[in-house]
Length: 328
Image (tube, rainbow, N blue to C red; front, top):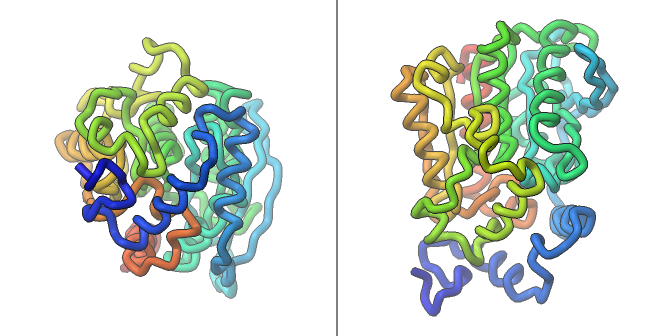
């Protein structure tokens, strides 16, 4: 327990992150789950714009694609000065509880992974919830990955040399994308980078009880996000909704994984359980827990100045580089 119950006084959280939580928890703002989706989205937009971060070293384009009757917008992000005509590519799926987030709010995180890996990123503008609910977003993400695998040359990437990455619910949908690639006979995904992922919808886990207040992602907020994305509790048991529901047979043959977890995160237990289940199924899996971190540490621009957080991002990028280029 944190001293006098407040996360901003908890010595298990890095001091720089405690400063952020102190400002956040004493801002007087309404809890996100009490706002409309539009209002909640703006809170994340404003938070990400509140500090200056480095967007240098990338070339950004976007286009609309259509695959199997699904039309969606994608952003293509490449390292500046790339000499390869067809770069290896990773599909990036953003977090924000299916409700919040977009390319601008995740631009710095994507930029860091691109610059440090040397690979291109394709970011899918999936339709958020509640405007669209499960399984619309995962079908859009799968359609984008399939299009890139078949038409990568059109955007200067090698769609046959593909990885996948995502944060929070983006980690959830990245895991699902890998399942879909296996189940549907492609596209082949070489590696999955799961950043503090949502893995199931069990709200009774110990980490939910320990870290459900005052640490950015709260228990009421995560439940609100689930209710927006998939209100039916029965459908949440499908492994395209909760990857931890997959059987060992369904997990066998999935791409190698790096799963990054935050110690002080309500999602810690489910992310760890999914990573261990991948390992049990024979999937080469590396599990990294970052002590002192909170949920979405790598996304939040106000935390980007913290060296330990930058280091974790560099580790993720290094894993992508090794998987796609064959060298660390």
